[in-house]
Length: 191
Image (tube, rainbow, N blue to C red; front, top):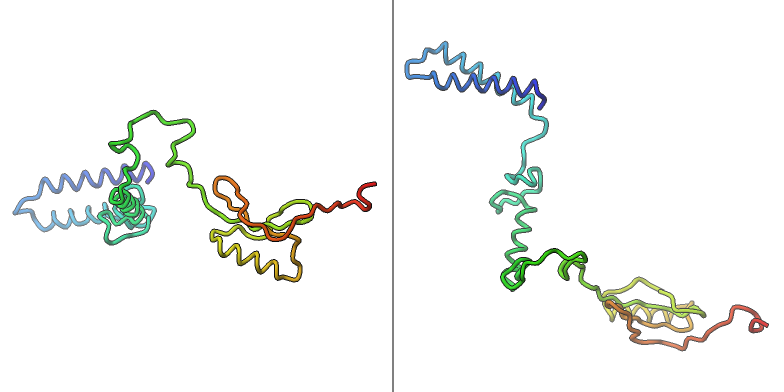
């Protein structure tokens, strides 16, 4: 809404307020028609000044967000946040600033809850003659990774050796299939 629209709408609404104060039981019909015309003029000014559509929720943070009919403010985003908070309270999570956590100044490096949780993966690797290299997509399931390596070993272009590496904040070799042999790429042993 620009300044001209704002002043015109303010003037129209003040005029309607004066009409409202002047109403009595014996107000003539001509005066009521005048009030009706001023109301239409004010509604037209409001219609012209509104740029977007009507908000879908009653949430001041997400007025045009997705709707959840069961939420008090109809906002799905805020209701999801509230449900998560209630669920963590129900399952024993105190959340930040609870009674058992003392209030301290924020750490430069963050707190443990701010960092992502370490993820556990199994990395299938093949020996290429000089080093171990990743030979497939890291898997979240160990049995799936072992089945993948078994299929690779049975394949037509099988490597000399395969291994399965467990990744969980650090690496641990779980199992090795075959024997890795260092292969010199120079003929005659680099003579």
